[in-house]
Amino acid sequence: MRPYAELVTDAGLEHLSLPGDPLPALTGRFSPSAFKEYNEQLTNGLVELAGQEADLLLLGMAGAPGQHVAEAMGVPSMGVHLQPVDPTGDFPPVMSLFQWSLGRWGNRRAARLAFELPAAGPLLAGLSTKMRARLGLPPMTLRALYRLRESTRWPVFHGFSPLVVPRPADWRPGLEITGYWWPPRPRGWQPDPVLGDFLVSGPAPVFVGFGSLAGTRAEQYTELAVHALRLAGLRGVFQTGLRGHISDDVLGIGDVPHDWLFPQLAAVAHHCGSGTTGSGVRAGVPAVAVPVMNDQPFWASRLTALGVAPAAIPFRRLTPARLAAALTTAVSDPAHRQRARALSVLVSAEDGAAPVVEAVNRLQATHRPGRRPG
Image (cartoon, rainbow, N blue to C red; front, side):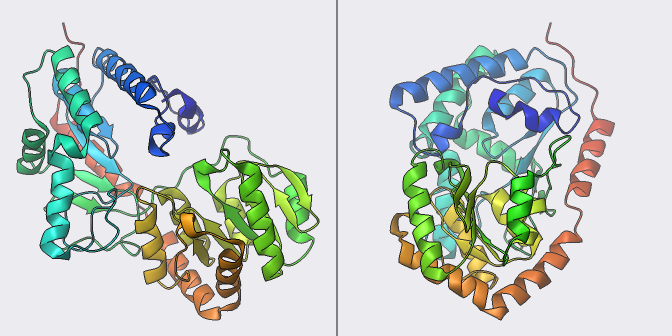
């Protein structure tokens, strides 16, 4: 997607952009008309992509449309996921409204329905139908696509640590958890001297960030976080939308590489997106989980189960007093820090990218490079 092109180019790679930005959809800020427009933009972009040359396609979690493109191009594909969405009895569907276990059979069934039923994903179902028609492919239902995926053992690699989420024993062959895929720092990045001075000017601060929600109500979230820090008697670095010195003990920042910032902090309070969760684990500091939606409650539950965070605070229940209490526990309880440090050592030693590179090389060795449809 065009808004994220720099993440690709900063890694020294070339790219072809797809139109639109999915972030408003993931955060519930799309109107029905905007949702329809994004659907049409994405369909057009993917159909145009099928006219390019490729050796294989690596597909994210919402990979069904990409599988249609790979079929039309005559090239292999494989999944590269940041969430464990495939059916398992170990936990309820990660991206669903169900945040409680339905039992092993119920958990598996609910996750499978999310793949198979148009009612569980009307955007995906409509997009798949349009895509196949535009690409000249025969119709295929979501259920048929899922069964094909399972019967061929379509490979999916997951970019998080098996120490954070152990591989479910009831997963089929071809579903692998490899370890985290750490992003490179932006090319030429240097820390802001104001931030550097703040970090060393007193006790280690805590981090407070709410991910994509930060820009929607920046002043409100900042006021809440400042109040919480005052109650807890802590210094803070905020990623809530406002920048600069909010007070002597609070600094608002923009995007800063987490691998540089987090190890210098006393704790990190965040929304529990998969990437931020992994960065906190790697840094070896305690966490405070404030999940909002989608997969975030799942990652929050993993941090609590691993003993590196106190009980999560759902965002809708967040108050200054609750945030202050959780931050105080995270910073003052030595058990949280000890477990966080021990987990960090093990996770940092993993090479999550290596198995993916090996799989790509195997696919390239067994398939001819794709050609433009003629």
